[in-house]
Image (cartoon, rainbow, N blue to C red; front, side, top):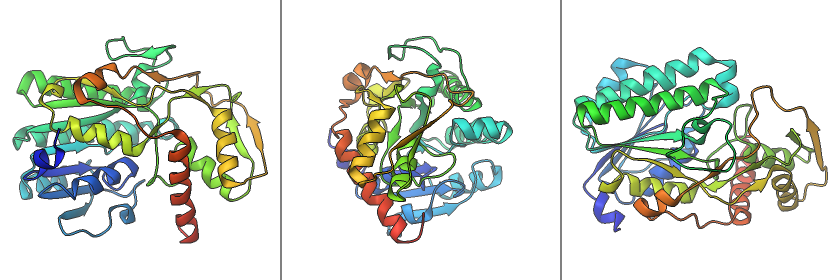
Amino acid sequence: MDLKEQYKDKSVLITGGAGAIGSNLMHQLRHICKDVVVVDDLSSGHQYNVGNWGNVIFRQGTICNEKFLESIFKTYKFDIVFHLASNFANQSSVDNPKKDLTTNGMGMLDVLLNAEKNGVKRFVYTSSSCVYGNQAGRLSEDMPNGKLDTPYAITKLLGEHYCKFFYTQYKLPVVILRYFNVYGEGEMPGEYRNVIPNFINTALHERPLTITGTGEETRSFCYVGDIVEGTLVAGVKQEAVGETINLGNPKETKIIELAYKINEITHNAQGIEYIPRRKWDSIQSRKPDISKAKEILGFKPRTPLSKGLANTTRWVRGKMESGLC
């Protein structure tokens, strides 16, 4: 598929566009779109991820502000909406369940309402592998949802149900993407961030990496560049409309192996320490079935973990040297 041809005359909105995935998506779209509007409240994203580009418009604000959202949709006539803004992620939702529901529930619904009202031609909702709950084996889209362990998992599934309602009730062309453990440039380390940037930051500061649990738990890590590639196709492929599609890398990695790799890349000699598993975290493994993504989107993750970790480490080190983390 010629993405440049498909996007060349399009006006695109990215909510949460100052985050890791959103900003990488923006940098691809700015080369091929007529214009790109990024909306972010900077609660977890960073404006330096967006930069300053001629056809990119940054608007700071929250999707929970109805008047702000209405003005964005009235001012810019969007062809495609990529909805990535959310209260991220599991631990944050446990600590702040009302904020999680406000952002991932009401905020998400308001984005949908504005998209439908203003005739958006494609609405791409980024969901999460968390909606599968605690289930073993390869996870496919036709499986029933398991036991949901956090408010984040609950509200991401809620968003999926609203998307399906708008698709059947109003014929809004929606695509639901379930992301699996995305990592890469653009994500700063922090209390509520993912394991990879936090491991890298800790290792670069020459401290032992802390593993919650045994370290034998596995995750399927997927590099942000590969995720963005699949997301771009979902934004224009007609066969994707109305579908729920996994995006991830089926290759599993033990957390202990991840820690060893990062210590090796960063030359951190401080080793590893263990602490008890978090109360809500019962997931031993999470592995996507991506056969549907291959069939509909032609999706194939190409970036080996070693290369992705090296790229991410360079990015985090650069931010450290700039005094940003």
